[in-house]
Image (cartoon, rainbow, N blue to C red; front, side, top):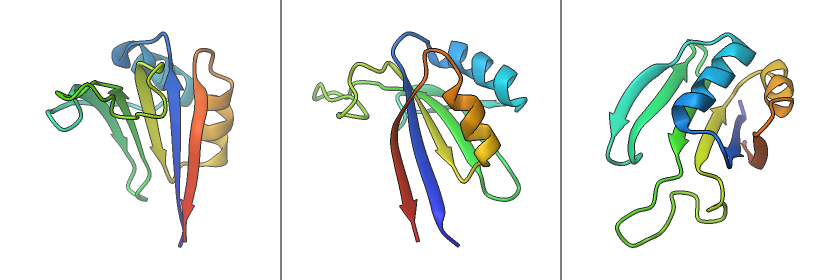
Length: 106
């Protein structure tokens, strides 16, 4: 089975504000977590079928590089793995959220 990876970004929303927007749009709950690897607090939704949504800051490391170097203007990132087309349709209609990259791995 192929895996789909989508990266969305927001220039204006914080991670917690984007969590609230996505929760309202998709109806999912998110667990607050903390990781130095992800720049501090982030939010995670996991499904039993393997799909995930992770909302993280586009944090800058000690060398001055953002987590997603190709998109430094986006302060918050939304990583979506193996979600339904309905979810992507709803996310694409969310203001202040832009699809930045899509990757399919067979």
